[in-house]
Length: 57
Figure 1 (cartoon, helix red, strand yellow):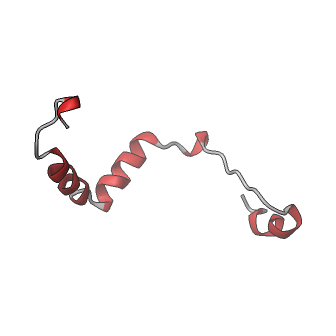
Figure 2 (spheres, rainbow, N blue to C red):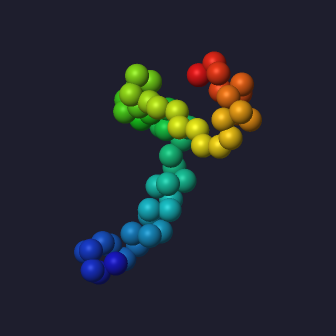
Figure 3 (cartoon, rainbow, N blue to C red):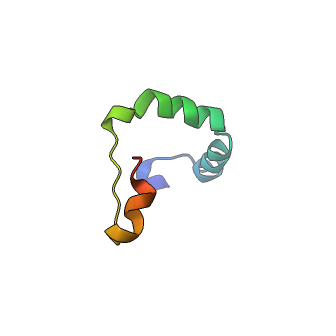
């Protein structure tokens, strides 16, 4: 960790901070940064097999 001048307990604190993220936190950030009008759906596979499953999209 010294290479990046991070504290000795950085990894332990990082893991705890990841565990502290709540579903509400994720939803809040998603609302702020993900816009429906900018999204694309990419489908790979046999068109005949999946076209009926994705027709509504």
